[in-house]
Every structure is written in C-alpha cells, then in structure tokens.
Amino acid sequence: MIKLFHVSDVHFGAEDPAALAWFETRVAAEKPDAVVMTGDLTMRATRREFERGGAWLKGLGVPVTLEVGNHDIPYYWDPFRRLLAPYQRYAAVERMIEHELDLPGVTVVPLKTTARAQWRWNWSKGRVSRGSLRRALALIAAAPKGNLILVAAHHPLIEGGTKGTAKTRHGDSALTALAAAGAHAVLSGHVHDPFDVPIDRGGWIVRMIGAGTLSKRTRNSPASFNEIRIDGGRFTTIARRQGDIPPAVITEDSAVGPARE
Image (cartoon, rainbow, N blue to C red; front, side, top):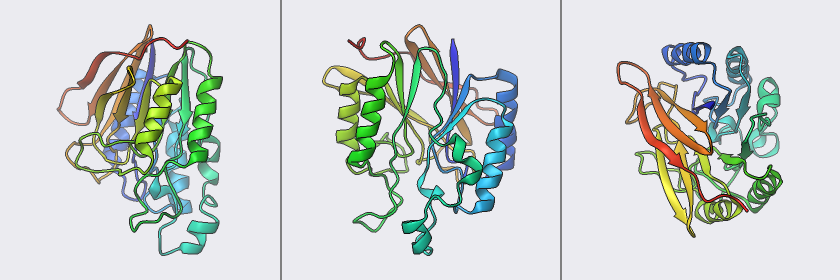
C-alpha cells in the first residue's frame, strides 16, 4: 500500500504552530511515502516565508512535491515583482516545486492554476492556461501504462461545495480533457476545507479532492490534511482533522475510472 499525505495552504506568515507540530508528529509516526503540497506555502511570498516554509518541508524527512499557489506570488502592491519576477524568491523551495515523485504505480502530474494577471479584478482565483493543460496532458500520456494518475493543482478546477470558491477559468474544460486523458483524481487546496467529489465525464470517473489548511485561516473545518491510501488500483481519502474529531473517511475504497487502454 502507498500512503500519501496531501496538505495545502500552510501560509507561513499566518501559520498555526500547533497545527504544524501536529502534522510533523503524524509524518514522523506514520511515515507516508510522500507529501503532496498543493500551494500557498506562504502568506505574502516573502523570501523569509519561503525560507521558513522550505525548512519545514525539508524537515519532514519524506519526499515532497510542491505546487505554487496564488499567495506564493507577490501581491498586487508590488506589480513590478509580480509581473516581471514572480519566482525570484523561490530559492529555498525551488527543488521541491513540481518535483517528480518515485512512487510505484502512481504518477503525480503538476497543473499550474495561478496567474500573474487576469482580465478580472480578483487575481487570486484560478486559471488554467492552454500551455499548462497541454503540459499536463503530455505528462499523462508519458506515464507508465496502468499507473494511477493524480493531478496536483492549487485551485479546484470546479467548485467542490465548500464555503470558499476557486472560480477557475477554463477549469471545467480542463477537467474534461484530463478525464479523457485518463486522470483519476485532481488534488487541490485554496478553499481551506477538505472535500472529495466524484465527477463523471463521458463515463470516466475523476475525483476532485481538496485539502484543508494548517494555517490560522480556517473556515468550516479545523486544521486538517488528507491521507490518501492507494492499494491495488483503488484509493481511499481520509480527512485528518486536528483535535478530538476522529479521522473522517471522505470516500471509502474509491474506485478509479476504467482501466486505461
């Protein structure tokens, strides 16, 4: 069995030290095969926040792959850096960004959903560009036949019924394309509440899986992360919530889509 911890929206700069310590304890005790971090490692994309977040991720002692979230790009009041040098402060985490994980039978495919600028006021919302989707589809096509395909993005491609929203432009059509290519699930964050929703696209089931937050910016759920157990072509998503709330199986023994040809 392969065990992944799916974590998101840690927001160094607004992190919850107790939640971070709890997550560290669970990693040390349960030793997942890898951690998938779906963005917003920082709050304001400062060099110091990236340094602290990078040190924390490295200190977990397990393989990590990291996606970039909207908070990981400099804010609007620093337009020069946001538009011309948005990745200048990433040095502490550069090697973890979209890092390829060596997991037997599992391929994690990155999908960028952040944008430096958009033709709308709220640039924090998601957007899937043609180039980002094309790259993800190419990586799916290159994956070993029969692998479980997990796409990692920051924004949910469609809404998952949470209080927070992503309003991801081109997300719906991207989800259709990913399903047609054989993706089994899309892991995301951004909304700060966990969810797992099966979506049928042309007879293929692709799961939309969202992680909660380990920051102080909680919404309807306490600090949480997802545990994903993969065994024999099937997987189970478990919302691990901090405190006295017992682990909640969001989707038990989830069947993936039909076998890839």
